[in-house]
Image (cartoon, rainbow, N blue to C red; front, side, top):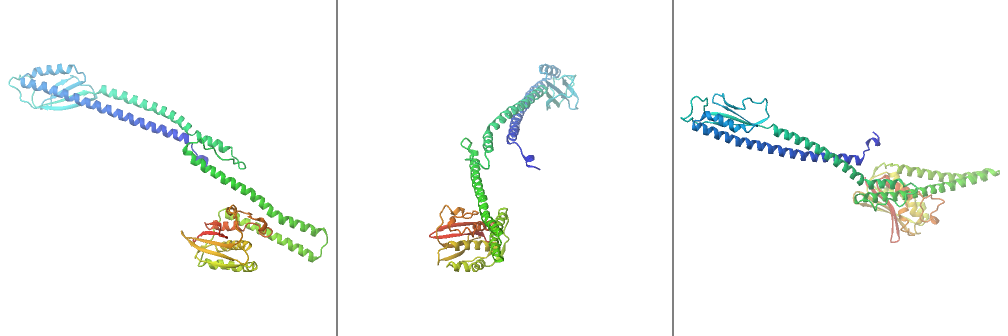
Length: 452
């Protein structure tokens, strides 16, 4: 699935969520209103039935106690005649209907009902011809069709109101979301005006809301880093061209001179030997650049256990013994740790650091290689030499490719300025970092690496 397929509109999603939230809120309000009115109507129906029950029971009690059972029917008819929504059925002890109002019950009426019974002794005045016997069971019901129709109209009105309210809130929410996202569109417009060769001062976040201020600050910091990287890349291209141009020019010039006139084999061998030195220098530059390229692409160190890092460092010091003695220097290894390292890479980094210290250390001084265990399973490997101090502005760039703090004393004809860049690459491949500092007349350059 492509990135475009996974993309979505924040404005559209927020508008939909606001619409759903508005509909849910209005639906809850509508349900609460409907439920409250339904409960109120049900309570009112129950109270009405209770009052009518008391009235009917009172009429029946008076008639039976007075022995006027025949007049009871008239009393009940007169009472119920004014209430078209009421109905009454009286059953005797055998379940026969002795009274019914209305005479014809509606088919499947919508009604609420209540049942009650009366067990009263007939008075001696009661007329025997009246077929009314105790105990009597009565069922009183109330037609609720009017209330049900009211509830239906109310439900329809609430549903329409909820939908209309949702549409209004959705339209307002969409407008608010578009207004709220306007700062983002402004940032997009500012970003579209940036180019790789003209990153400019960055984004203007002065008019942006507080929520976007951290994003603008981080983006501007990223632009600053990109501008620095772009500047370094341009400088790197120029440095590569310069470093390769010098030996190539030398090769071309010496070869042209050799071809212009006849030379004896000894002179040709001398020319070929000089050309071979330049070719070897070119080859070293290319190999170092290939190594740095692999490191930049994420190549990792192949670790093997080393019982003594000091022993590995001492091997490198012995390899440089001739050059250090020639410079009048002593090399001292201080400290030791055990850990897992890519030993060939460590030897290469220490060799570069020691070679760098040998070139710049004061005569008759001691170059120390310090190995110090630190917290969090780290080891600090530093080459310390006494010599001319390095200015503070040069320290952060010592590990840049082809960078020379002082080209006049950097042996540019022999060393091409990739040694410390390789040291930094070795540190990155081990998951560590390279560092440099000058204090109390001593220059400290080294690596800080995880032990495992």
